Amino acid sequence: MAGEWGHTPLPWPRPDELPGIDCWCGRRNCLELWLSGTGFARDAGRPAEDVVARPDAAGDAALARYVDRLGRALGVVADILDTDVIVLGGGLSNLDLLYDRLPAAIAPHVFSDVFDTPVRRALHGDSSGVRGAAWLWPLDR
Image (cartoon, rainbow, N blue to C red):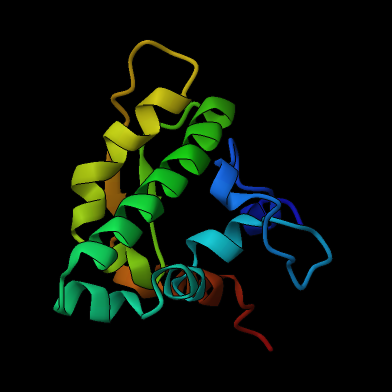
């Protein structure tokens, strides 16, 4: 199960994020509950596609919370792995605003005075993870 980032807790939870959400895995406040499309829709009260298609103050606030949460989580990853680049995948990686806003949201959470790691879109879009998994499938099956 190495690399299962989705079932680690949301770092530096804000008071309104506590005590947290119970996860199906038996833990509480797993990143997957906050950073998935389903988690975004639960927080925003509607899917991300709708928030982007029909912007309003509530949707803007939900996007700001999402960027903040993702920034905190990626700050931990950047500290542990000293990444050269951060590549986003999944459906929410299609939100163009992430690539503008995330570096500033990550920076306060890294253990450095400087954060210049680029945040990039996956080369093959939101299906890059599935594509990579398919490459691992043995051809002789």
